[in-house]
Image 1 (spheres, rainbow, N blue to C red):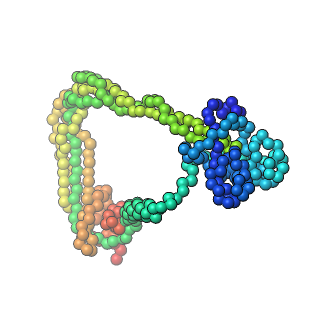
Image 2 (tube, helix red, strand yellow):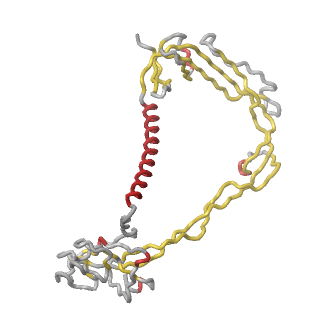
Image 3 (cartoon, rainbow, N blue to C red):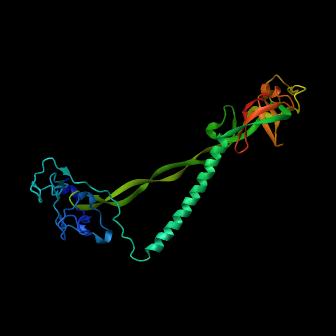
Length: 339
């Protein structure tokens, strides 16, 4: 990176702490070695100073990231040909490690630290307690759903229902997005209505970040990301009249025993076999077969089964079934009890 590439932004010194004697806040360029014990700075341990402690580097000339001497691990300016500590060459040297924009170390408060830690510990325990309860509930649900026991039960009753929908060809009023209006429908009204939202550009969100230049200095750069806002999207909303087959009633047959066998309800149609206004036809059919079971503790259960399986479960016959820890029956596991 050339001097011109740095632009006109001010350049500041990084900080480092001496590993030899513990001196803190040494300057990345001014103090290449600790002034108290002579230890060389470690480029990988440099850090950014707090905002109010920045030290500007006057007339800084940037040559490039420091190189670390392969002989003595001392960082040297990119402008140097020989190591300032041992005189070794830059052959095989690696560029100094740069650091990311992380907050500088925060010292422990001299007084009151115990109280702060205690409060933080109490808050942490409360959060961990809540998390523990949630995890326990989830585990109980999982275990209760997937772990089962096989119980024996007695068939205590049966029930069945069969229904047939009756549809009539009629003119009905409906509404929806105009694009959904069926062919042949007669539009009765149209208006604009909010259908949803879409994201549109709404400027930028910018933050200042510190950028390690690799030579003991840093500069502040502004990073911006586009931001968006939700804007309502409108579309045409219609009301219409259309001719269609519409359910007008339901015929039902039901029973509470295996015998007589289930039958479909008799369906009476007015003007059947046509497709004009007022004509009727049979619509969808539905059927349901339930068997009542009683466990050996006297508790009742119900299973919804296919007709063939339902009709083969005689009253007072014994069956085994998988039961979850939460008490639910896995009706698909029903099987005659083996004696």
